[in-house]
Length: 176
Length: 160
Image 1 (cartoon, one colour):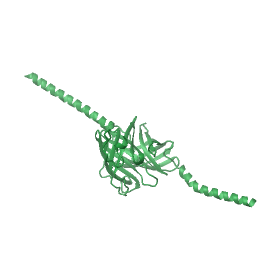
Image 2 (tube, chains in turn red, purple; image 1 turned 90 degrees about the vertical axis):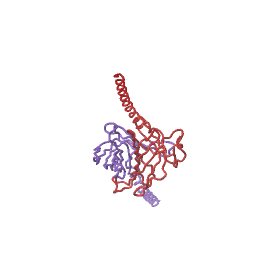
Image 3 (cartoon, chains in turn orange, yellow; image 1 turned 135 degrees about the vertical axis):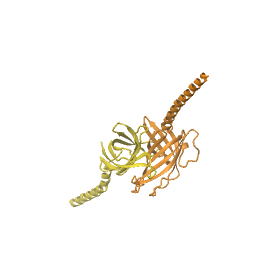
């Protein structure tokens, strides 16, 4: 009568132990994949940004291929604009979240700006987040002292299959 | 003969003076500092944020360069920012005349609060710059138009 109880408790303990070990290893693996590896590669990212309080316009639609690279710890990304223009940026990642920042490429005399993307990897092939654009135009009413606007973005990782044909200003298929 | 020679010399002098007065401002403007030349040692000072994030005074060595990246018709303006403890991160920059903007992501350990650094400044001479530093922290702040907590500071830079 005691043996089954002993085995039952042993089994329960073993199951609890293995579950905790598996759970720990699983979350660590997830973090490793999500934080860094999942971001590497080419993404088609779609931005939705309203006009700024000062009337500076990011432009809609805004969908571009982004390439995230890590060259020996130097984390660089490039956004492909129209006419093959590459806009460079820098990024970091921690957990399932990342931050990337870019300087616009502007002709002289045009109000230019800085873009910062704060996002999270929602699956191996999807991301979403917020984008902050700080224009060069001064605005004393904002904490930054510059005309500032926020928007949102969603991204889909480009695979061999592509992500559809509805890209407005260049998507995965234009870089594959 | 001598009179016409003097007249010719006077005319030539006037033309040289006019040409010099036209190109001198261009030469002087062009002589203003360029971010993409040599290295800049930049000291950034920022107050603590409302939530307690401490940046303090930090010095970075900035090496900014423009790299050709065909088929892109424009070069990639990349920079490396090396902090006093030797941690190096990549960033990007742009410059129009005397004004410039550069940005990079700080190097942080996992779990530490982190931030994006934006430096908006002006070249004050060939070898000196200063301006405003904006830190965009990772902490959300729904009352801030940026959606995240921001801190404004200052910076000064010297070309090495």
